[in-house]
View 1 (cartoon, rainbow, N blue to C red):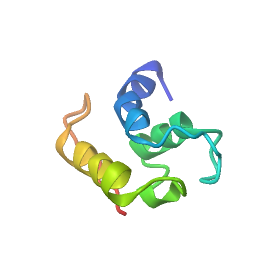
View 2 (cartoon, helix red, strand yellow):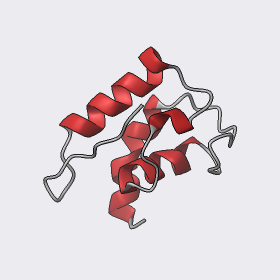
View 3 (cartoon, rainbow, N blue to C red):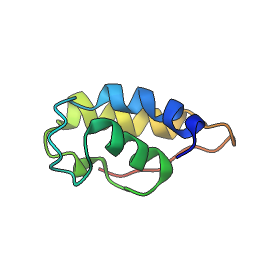
Amino acid sequence: LALLGIHESYPVAKMLPGVNCGACGKAGCHDLAEALVSGEVKKVSACRAGKKDKNFDPIIAYLKNTPGPDGKTIDVGM
Protein backbone atom coordinates (compact mmCIF):
# COMPACT_ATOMS: atom_id res chain seq x y z
CA LEU A 1 0.00 0.00 0.00
CA ALA A 2 1.01 3.55 -0.49
CA LEU A 3 2.00 5.62 2.49
CA LEU A 4 -1.48 7.12 2.54
CA GLY A 5 -2.99 3.62 2.84
CA ILE A 6 -0.74 2.82 5.77
CA HIS A 7 -1.83 6.04 7.49
CA GLU A 8 -5.50 5.13 6.97
CA SER A 9 -5.02 1.67 8.47
CA TYR A 10 -3.46 2.99 11.71
CA PRO A 11 -6.76 3.53 13.59
CA VAL A 12 -7.91 0.04 12.58
CA ALA A 13 -4.61 -1.47 13.75
CA LYS A 14 -5.08 0.23 17.14
CA MET A 15 -8.54 -1.41 17.45
CA LEU A 16 -7.14 -4.90 16.87
CA PRO A 17 -5.87 -6.85 19.91
CA GLY A 18 -2.21 -6.15 19.13
CA VAL A 19 -0.94 -9.66 19.83
CA ASN A 20 0.62 -9.97 16.34
CA CYS A 21 0.02 -13.72 16.42
CA GLY A 22 -0.30 -14.18 12.66
CA ALA A 23 -3.28 -16.56 13.02
CA CYS A 24 -5.10 -14.45 10.41
CA GLY A 25 -2.44 -15.28 7.84
CA LYS A 26 -0.83 -11.84 7.99
CA ALA A 27 2.48 -10.90 9.58
CA GLY A 28 0.73 -9.06 12.42
CA CYS A 29 -2.12 -6.78 13.39
CA HIS A 30 -0.93 -3.84 11.31
CA ASP A 31 -0.75 -6.01 8.18
CA LEU A 32 -4.29 -7.25 8.85
CA ALA A 33 -5.46 -3.64 9.30
CA GLU A 34 -3.92 -2.72 5.94
CA ALA A 35 -5.66 -5.71 4.33
CA LEU A 36 -9.02 -4.67 5.80
CA VAL A 37 -8.64 -1.06 4.66
CA SER A 38 -7.53 -2.10 1.16
CA GLY A 39 -10.40 -4.57 0.80
CA GLU A 40 -8.09 -7.57 0.50
CA VAL A 41 -9.68 -9.06 3.64
CA LYS A 42 -13.48 -8.75 3.87
CA LYS A 43 -14.16 -10.05 7.40
CA VAL A 44 -12.78 -8.77 10.68
CA SER A 45 -13.21 -12.24 12.16
CA ALA A 46 -10.05 -13.17 10.24
CA CYS A 47 -8.47 -11.98 13.50
CA ARG A 48 -8.59 -15.08 15.68
CA ALA A 49 -7.52 -13.26 18.84
CA GLY A 50 -10.14 -10.49 18.57
CA LYS A 51 -13.43 -10.20 20.41
CA LYS A 52 -16.72 -9.10 18.88
CA ASP A 53 -17.55 -6.29 21.31
CA LYS A 54 -14.02 -5.08 21.99
CA ASN A 55 -12.47 -5.30 18.51
CA PHE A 56 -14.79 -6.32 15.67
CA ASP A 57 -17.82 -4.07 16.28
CA PRO A 58 -15.67 -0.91 16.66
CA ILE A 59 -13.69 -1.71 13.49
CA ILE A 60 -16.83 -2.36 11.45
CA ALA A 61 -18.39 0.89 12.69
CA TYR A 62 -15.23 2.90 12.06
CA LEU A 63 -14.80 1.64 8.49
CA LYS A 64 -18.52 2.07 7.75
CA ASN A 65 -18.65 5.65 9.06
CA THR A 66 -15.23 7.08 8.21
CA PRO A 67 -14.71 7.95 4.55
CA GLY A 68 -11.25 7.60 3.05
CA PRO A 69 -9.57 10.23 0.84
CA ASP A 70 -11.79 9.16 -2.05
CA GLY A 71 -14.91 9.89 0.02
CA LYS A 72 -15.90 6.22 0.17
CA THR A 73 -16.35 4.03 3.21
CA ILE A 74 -15.30 0.41 3.53
CA ASP A 75 -17.85 -2.35 4.05
CA VAL A 76 -16.45 -5.28 6.00
CA GLY A 77 -18.35 -8.07 7.67
CA MET A 78 -18.03 -9.96 10.89
